Length: 217
Image 1 (spheres, rainbow, N blue to C red):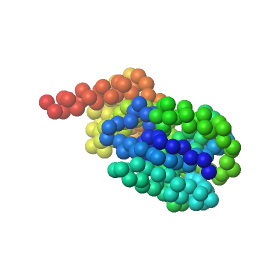
Image 2 (cartoon, rainbow, N blue to C red):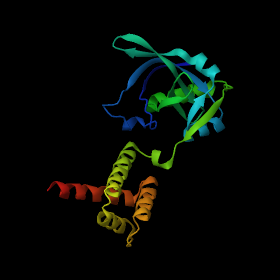
Image 3 (cartoon, rainbow, N blue to C red):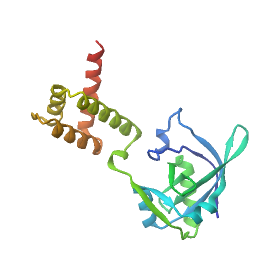
Image 4 (spheres, rainbow, N blue to C red):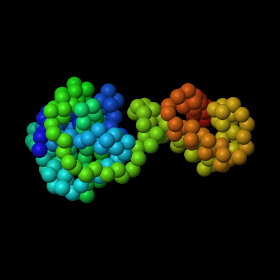
């Protein structure tokens, strides 16, 4: 099995954030070496769109093969591997059953080097199965995902408090029409929030900022 050496990784359960979205508070780790597997384009597309599970034979092959620099000593990560094709790659952590625990993108220049290495590798015949689709509400920049969660939480609080007047106000501001059905307003707002980030998200984000300021006065 081939290895990649001396890279930075930032495993997250939610998604593999682009390196320019990494925060100082993230658990960014310095990897000395990590195994790499080349898969088919079809498998890679499935990997991109879903959280995944890998087979027991792969789990046994990668066990303790990843080494992390930690406080001037090396620490083994039990189940970690880079999976990619000639166009895309991610690093993964799994539990002992092969179920994905987290994924990481790579720093841009390191990713380019890893993709060049993957191009030279032979395809690995490995079994990868999807666990859970990565939905549209999980897709976007870190800023967009964080603010989507904030907006959903605010809508949920208003719904739970049965504040119909505020729900009507927000609904009118977003959709430009009056509605009185509580469940319909809630469902339409949540569906709108879960879509691709756009003008209505910006509008809701700014609206809640104003409402929260007024609440504090």
